[in-house]
Amino acid sequence: MKLNDLEVFLADDLSWRKFELSSLFTIAETSGHQNGIESDLHKTTLKALYLLLYSHWEGFVKKSCKIYLHYINNKKVETKELTHIFTALALKKSITNCYSKESLDSLSISTYLDFVTLHTAKLTQKFKVNVKIDTDFDDEFIKTFSNLSLKNYRNLLESIDLPFFPFFSDVEHNQTVTNLDGTTQNVTILSETLDFSLLYYRHSIAHSGATSETLNIDTYQNLQNKILFLMDLLVSSISEFCHKEFYKSCNSTQKTAYIDAKNTEIKESFLMFYHSPDNLNEEFLAD
Image (cartoon, rainbow, N blue to C red; front, side, top):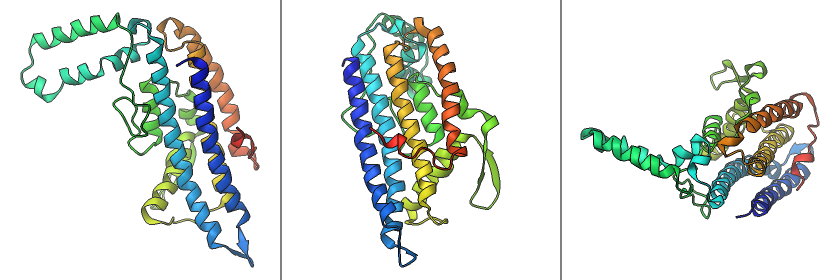
């Protein structure tokens, strides 16, 4: 897979997802009220939008991460040239076997020596892991556990050495959310978006067919824009990491500089969703 192929794939995969969301949103928007009463079609479509938004969030993140690993596979780079995370990925199965219960029951120095030998050999071999790009299900390396929460999202990115930007965990921008029992708590800005908005509505609708709150199309639109921002951000991160070969350990200084600069840009852009009433609604649905 060439870099252009990667970028075309990501653009196409994101484009059809945005089209579906835009089409369904138009139905929800134009079916609002009949005789001053919120129509059943509007309420049903709005619930469907939350489910579709989550589906595309999880599906796109999973597919993009798989394609990123597939791309690095095809670069045929020696494992020792990559960051330590890729060394860990290449040795994942061996590490698991070494510390499995069966091995612990009969652990001997030979177990460790075998692992050291394998580790030494892996470093000079071309990096390659078995990533299943033709299925939407979890595989050995890319896992969302059908629940792409903040925790799982961050773990996934960090497990393949893609950036989780510091702004998203900066307590300075914590948001106050209300728990089911009526109490409140402060959470990070991304937890408010993913855990207490997207997943909250997804779980409520998917498991009970309803929510404890009246759904509002403006609230939904703001959430959709934030999720699409995160999906666009993932595309730009993967593209930049591939262009600049930030997956190589020799480029760690440049990678850190990129993350720092991009973090400032993300902070300015994401905070707009909390200060601008219109939130540039059309921007993130553009192809």
